[in-house]
Length: 427
Ligand SMILES: Cc1ncc(COP(=O)(O)O)c(C=O)c1O
Image 1 (cartoon, rainbow, N blue to C red):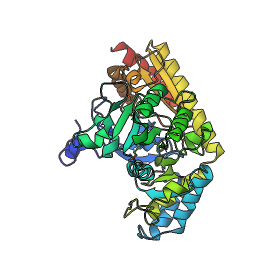
Image 2 (image 1 turned 60 degrees about the vertical axis):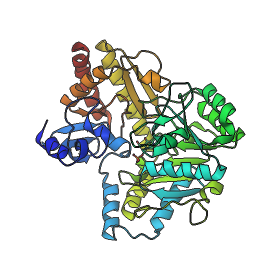
Image 3 (image 1 turned 120 degrees about the vertical axis):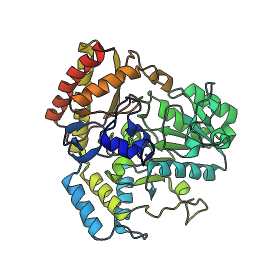
């Protein structure tokens, strides 16, 4: 325990504003961050860490990029929130469409959770059907319908994945193993005329990184089209991070009906979006019957951060991020191997993660759950001791930025050489 964490726990449930920050998966007390710049964060004692969390994705350019901070300051000076449309919002929507042409219309919200929740409402309205198909291990935020977890069968009507979610909400969600197209075929054969949408992480990174197998996303496109269901590509994490247009564009997959974005879209400020084909997007109020609204939606300060971030995210930025991700992934993998730590490294574009204690391919959530969480916890704390702040769970991706240059990558790899021995030896 440390004093600040005790104080936090006395007023905030678990001491944190979002659960994974609490270090429950790795033990110990969370780092309270006071400052971040480039590839680094500093704790309340002034200790500096190389940051591989990157605010869970948004920090593509590195923390506190001077141009983004200046744009935010300028916007703030002009007023924090208007509750009226702005030109910058239009520019941000145009930038999204430029990068992902299938996004003919874009509606801004404040969080990824709102984006996926709205996408589902739109899909239900467009099809007049109730059921949603989601994949086990994919995370789409914390709305009721998407907090269903798999039942015991291969493709089951969901059970509530959280206390407080009704059986009814979970029953309208069918949970299917990831990367198992035949299970999706079977679900459509059984329930096809009741399925409103399939929602999938464009490339999953919330069960560790589990890339879609070749043909999986294209297969979802074919199946949904054949059965008159909507396909929702959740790019909250991958959008504008794994490439200028996100995963779907990068892989050249036939467009989805609806997309969700967040994280990099706001460059560290709360902005997210649901976007897609004009016909379905124009079901939204005020044009159509699907209600959706938000006091702070398209907030001008957040919009300024997002617009500046996207304008700066050019080919050079993506090259730098890709380069850093390969260097760190391969360097850490080598360090783990040298220390005799069995592991599997997996990537989807610049997203990557390690499954410690696993030596075969991780294709599904069940595979991901075979990892040795205690081994990861030891590795995590040894890395922290060496000055590297990893995501505090083996079920999370590691995030790099364009400021993770070769010297920073070397710092991470040197730390991993020490931490791999500590973790491997103390089993
Ligand atoms: C793929 C995906 N979708 C949706 C969300 C929810 O976004 P938010 O945390 O902004 O509500 C997340 C958050 O991590 C995510 O990774």
